[in-house]
Length: 192
Ligand SMILES: [Fe+2]
Ligand SMILES: [Fe+2]
Image (tube, rainbow, N blue to C red):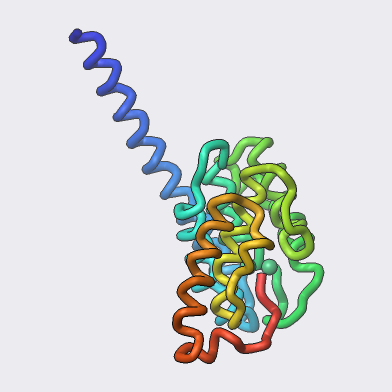
């Protein structure tokens, strides 16, 4: 009985240490991204958006999803944008940046995590889903913040079951309130 208690106690301590390290490393990535971003990518694709994508990662979390990859994606995927409009190469440039900082800022990530992160960054502007739970969760965490540019996420364009479910709820809310929230229908389409 005592041994069982010791094992559980030990496991909880290890878990706490993991959570502490995870938050510490994500915060380092966050600070790095804030320092690297340009003044031209503030409102729609800057830190406010990145923090919301990281929050969405928690909402979308599911079995088989590497939450570290999704949270790092939140702070890296748009950091190489050079403007707030259509910047078609920014995903590829973010993937290149991941290679540049993989042994420094991202030194806490495994090779497998780095590969997933690079793929998610490179594809996030043009690909709807990949079939990989972690990469698809990156896409949906980003898409769920489309409300900031006046677009309600389309449930049929989400890549994960959780993303689809949340998008359906958002659409229910919007249709109920649509006469009162006109900015939701703004035609700008420079999101993701
Ligand atoms: Fe993007
Ligand atoms: Fe984004």
